[in-house]
Image (cartoon, rainbow, N blue to C red; front, top):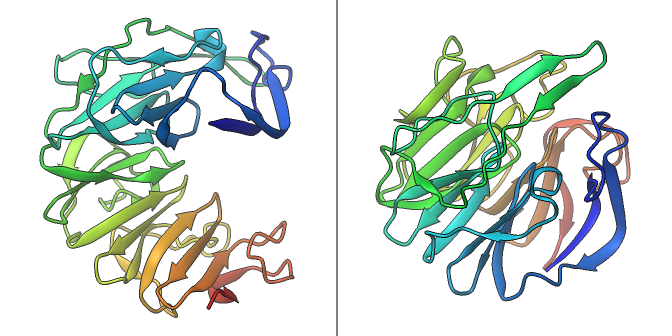
Length: 295
């Protein structure tokens, strides 16, 4: 397993976020981890090894330690929850959660414990008063069973896809990105999302959710990708992404998306500030454009 890019400094404990960043311009091997089969990145990092064990770490609060969760040996899937925790899918179809430190938003867990996040406002930035979790045991999330997959991405909305293709969601719902009415800003426990069925996978970003169905059709919840600075179109209704054939894979960035269709074509849409769409321009596109064909 390797890491690269920029992230929290492994040595500095600074209240200034700009002083607490280190960079790895080239991939650097993580010697402490081996036989890794899945990873999830975000504010908290996690990995599943070939034995089904889960490893978690958070440089600023765990002193660069890599910790194995004590009660998970059968993990099948893992995802960052958009805050300070990771969601873990086990072989029996239940979903569990581990949190690195307290969160601003509360989650109700199976043992009725809460994790809370405290902030103090500074004139320039928020200083986190961190309550570190030194218990490396995951807790079961109530209300989820027969789950087949977890959503992936950077959004604070979380989804669990059941084996029958139905979907459960919890977390932030600003802009209706959970598929719930916009007046519901946050859901602290999983609820069944009406109108979602035959779902294969879900990817999330801060303002958006993309839903890939088993028939290869791609749908949106929340703001349209790349559109939230323009007309602010959003809503709980599922909206199909036109101009694509049968989609087999999709990824969602902060303000752009890419999809691969079964014919080997790569499509992209959204903001194009730095050439994210890969079409040789810096022009935004609110509809999918063909980037390249791999066949």
